[in-house]
Amino acid sequence: MKIAFFNIAYENLAVSILSAIAKKAGHTVQLFHSPTLFKDGMTREFTRLARFFSNDEQLFRQLTHYQPDLIAFSVVTFDYKRALHYAEICKRICPQAKIVFGGIHVSCVPEVVIANDFVDYVVIGEGEIAFTEIISHIEQENSTAPIPNTWYKTKDHQLIKGKQTGFLQDLDSLPHYDMEIWKDIFPLKTYYLTMASRGCPYHCSYCFNHYFRNIPEEKTNYVRRRSPGHVIEELVFAKKTYNISLIEFWDDIFIFDKPWLKEFLEAYKKEIALPFKCYIHVNLFDEDMAAWLSDAGCQWVDFGIQHINETYRRTYLKRHETNANIANALKLLKKYHIVSFADYIVGLPGDTLEHNEEARLFFLENTPDIIEPYWMSYHPKTEIIEKGLQHKLLTTETIDLIQRGQNPQSYFDSPLASKDFHSDYYFIFKVLPALPVFLRRKLTYHVSKKMPYGIKVALIICSLFFLAVKHKSPRIKYVTSFYWKQMLWMKNQKKKT
Image (cartoon, rainbow, N blue to C red; front, side, top):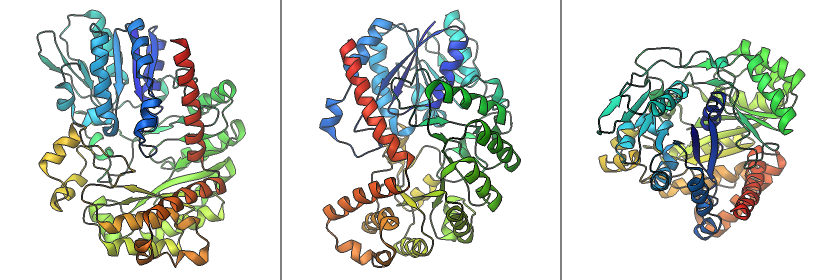
């Protein structure tokens, strides 16, 4: 069978694993990638540049020539609307092809996605078993048997819903990610992305995990690990094949299993020994872990603070760390020379000016190396939506738009009904770590409020690049190399067609 993966903007590990499974089964796989440069959510949108760097014409020409039997999309809320746009065109170009949608957004609102005439199958929850079954189902043509974790439409427009099976427990049974499909598009040498686990042990109200974990009808462990040997095997191959120089582990929380972490890091130091970045949680982080991570080559960690008021954080966000835990984690990271990226959400429902001032004062005494403020972004079926309704920031109409991907905002856009002070505190958090210590206390809300917008933008850009260079930020390195490689790749694609 000929399979096409239609990918938007970023490298997608779901595509990588499904491609590996399809190739192992003997199917032909081709990637159709739309970089959506300058409107990908990674930077501000620049309409004219986005049009200039569009490769849609080349993609559709290649798709016409390939004529796949199956076209698969894996989407989050932010790119769902664009995925629908491409899927409808794909169906016109390849009317015999079956369109399959999966991903976080689809799992939350499958009834919305399957309602589109050009979508034939939707995968709910994890997709490895479902994808294999869908391929077999397409080959059998007229079967009306249910497919696990899948809804699909028959020829007479009947909707068949399969059972929601438990989560795959043995992650080592899966093949390694297929990185060959990305090698001409993404800077693998500069930045190698992988995961050693699945699931998160926490229940944050703004995150999809609390909903996703309850999708299966049969209950199984949600948080699962690959064995240290399985991950090392992948990285040894990647290091040899792609000459990688930096690794990011995309696990929700990389450190949640302390014995596993110790065993893995000992093997990593011996066999891989490359700088890497991972995600931690301050409630789990201790001095042993800080020492092990530093010794193994961890140069950067990311963790969420999201809100500094402990009562708000506990009741609205379902996060139970204390500010003392956060301060202690920052102290340990500085002691072991690991760069700290602290995520902070601006514009949460019920957030006040006093809350933001509390955060500013906390960051003066406990300054992360880089503060990453993100505007609040609502996602389907997350519990924080109830708080949005309660504070009259959301209505049933806006929730419907979010579910349909009609009003998704990136983390770079101010949220629904944000207050004026939010923009000022976003600016303060962004530039604070870049300022000399003697200037940090002088950047108050009232000072920020008086500063011209153009000056703020210039300071944010300068701070961004200063901190990136100072801390050798993998994100800036990735964005820079990503854009250059994408542009070169697109230039070559246009030459070929």
